[in-house]
Image (tube, rainbow, N blue to C red):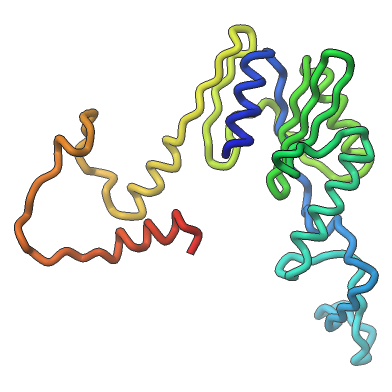
Length: 211
């Protein structure tokens, strides 16, 4: 998230154009390391009538090597276009043309392309599409569950997570709860020593911690 916020701050300060795209069936585009031999059964309806196995050449979803194979495949392509990985975050790539800064930020199969103009951002996507299959999604509006409202002329960006908040409320059956604008400490109530079911809270904290 620090990388995303930093990119947004630079975008607002420099009034950059931003386009979003995602890789089409990303993992399947990546090749498996030739030193790794993985065999699979012939898929139903496409066999040759024998019990011979098939050698995987490209990654498949669910394969433990797939994510790394895609990362390395993507990195090779972007670096090959003249970008360099950020020293801070290997999923952020930078390219300098004089005083113009161009950036490609990736999160698994999601891409954000930053450039001086929309035409230049589209040109970068054109470069990427010569090496991988992409689905262009136009100007950024959502990224990693964050709603992004961007006024390029004013250099103003607003990030909100209303959709995520509503999802959490729905999950815990609180869509009809009363809303408050005051800090939490001002609306807390004491319920004595009545036993409390902490399981919903534990599910929420486990989700935050990635468990």
